[in-house]
Image (cartoon, rainbow, N blue to C red):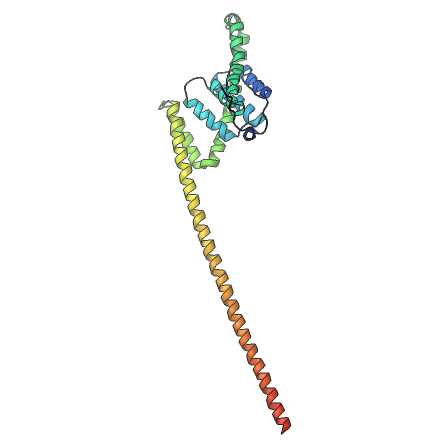
Length: 253
């Protein structure tokens, strides 16, 4: 099976296997709190640390991953691996990402059952939860700011509020909300692009019309000035010639 990888120029130059594997290992070993907790770590590795993609592309990946079945962590790891190293990169990224958690569960399963009632362990878990909430909040704010640049603050705020209502009180499946947001976003951007192109077309037409009129007026004014100046010059020359001729005639007499 051929390992078809995207053009590495699109992901910020040459990407080493070591960087990919280390990034997936870090996201696998330091993630605590389930699927949502891995999203900020994945974003930090792919966008901030190695610049494999922009925030906009990562947000689209998260939206599509939430709409598909299965754990979001493995879907993100598979996409990032394929994005930088093709099919083989996707396979190795998933394996390296899930390997630390799998080994930890096998090795520490007995210890977890023995320590689950410990106050120390309970305090550690309670201390980690607010950190996860803050990380998710920061990421949500940055995604919201990115969406506002594309949709505008008003449309982005309305979309966020509507999604919150649909996911919360109405209890609509997240996949349907994501699909509805994608459809609305595509229609919104098309309408905005059409209006922008129309405005630019009108502005360009007005500019061309002004450009066409102004040279005509200039040329016309120049021609009028030239003809007036030329006529006046010829009249003066004829006047001087006439005066000279009459002087010569008087002198001869």
